[in-house]
Length: 199
Image 1 (cartoon, helix red, strand yellow):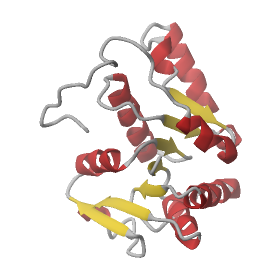
Image 2 (cartoon, one colour):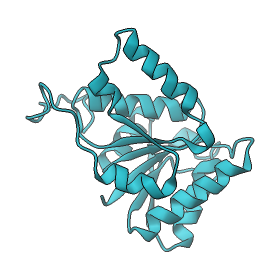
Image 3 (cartoon, one colour):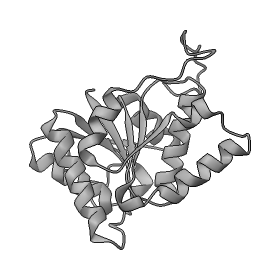
Image 4 (cartoon, one colour):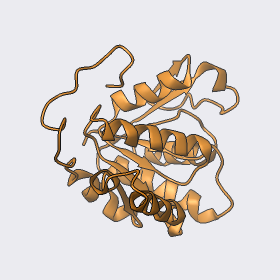
């Protein structure tokens, strides 16, 4: 994998362990020679991931809407900062630039990015791995909920398995590298793209 998109909070969160985990992720990706693709801010967990990767000599690509440059304090020290017009453009470009996706702790924006990218995977718009870093059990309630959604019949078990989870930064990269999308209709051939479809 050459690049991984990180979805995470624009604040550091209430627990210092989240900042430490973001630092560990940035360092691990840089040491592995993997480019960090992220939301382009220099505050919160976003900024911590970017700064940690840069400090290790890694490459960092930010993607941020123009209207949010000031609010999120766009990080102009990254390798490349793409300033786009809309959130939709942000997510589509991050998807284009990345070979995989990892969600660290975060709020509505993080969950929005996570669920959109896993939905695109379910629809076979891409076959890239998507994972949660379940730092200190942060995402365990969400994982339990998704299992209940499977039981309720709204997510097929094979599609539930597409969203992976790891408690350890050390286990994260091998897990992403070993990912294979589930077999089934539509997976054996490319999806014909429309102008609005992500790629």
